[in-house]
Image (cartoon, helix red, strand yellow):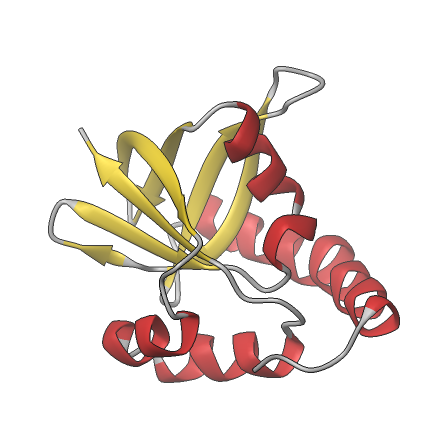
Length: 137
C-alpha cells in the first residue's frame, strides 16, 4: 500500500511536475525514452493536449498505467472527462480509449508489467495507486 498523505503528494507532485516531467518530455523530443512513454490527454478545462510522461506499459494491444496519486492526478481527471487518449511509445503514436480499473490490484499489475526502475520509483513517490488500461485502436 502506498504511504503518505497530502504533504507527501504535494512535494512529489511539485518535484514531478516542475522538474522530472519537463526533463523527460525534452528527452522524448530528442528520441531518448529510457523506458518511458508519453500519455496525451485532452485538458478538461482548456481542451488543449496535455502530455504526461508515464512508464512504458505497452503490452500487445493495450497500454497499462499505474498512477502515482490516483484520482488526484490531473491526467486521471482529464481521462474521467474524456477517455480518448494518445500514447507515444518510442517514435510511434497510438490512439485509444482509457478505462479506470478500480478493482485491478496496482501491486499485482506492477508485478506483471515488470519495469523495475519505473515501478520502484512509483512505489516510493506514490501516495494512491490506481490502474488505467488503454485499449488501443
